[in-house]
Amino acid sequence: MDSFSLVEQHLDKHSPTNKLLYGKDIPRYKQEVKSYYKLVRDQPSISSQELKIFLQGESKKHRNEFNESVALRELCKYMLRYFQQVFASKAFICQFKRVIFSEIL
Image 1 (cartoon, one colour):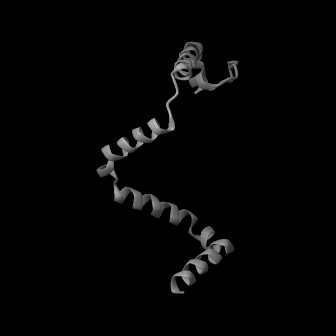
Image 2 (cartoon, helix red, strand yellow):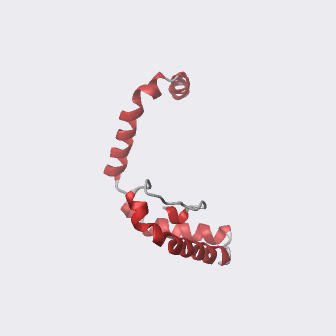
Image 3 (tube, helix red, strand yellow):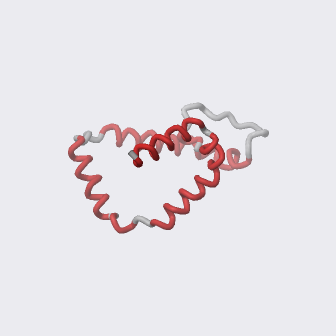
C-alpha cells in the first residue's frame, strides 16, 4: 500500500513490523507504480462508442454467470444489517406509501 502513497514514509523502531520488513522495497515498487500509470496515461483514449461496444460484448460473454443465490444472500445481509434504520426512516415510509397508493390507483 505504501507504494501507492504520495507521502514519503519515514521508518523508525516504532514502525509496524510489516513496514520495517518491506520498507527497503517501497522505493522500487513506487517506481513500478509510477511507470505503470505513465503507460496508462500515455495510451490513446478511446471513444465512448468504443467503450460501449466493449462493455456490451463483456456483458454478453458473462450473461450466464450471474449467480442469483449470491445476489440474494448479499441483499439479505444488507437487509438484516439496516432493517431497523430503513423502516424507522420517515422518508422510507412516505416513499413506501407513495408506491403502494400509486399501484392501487
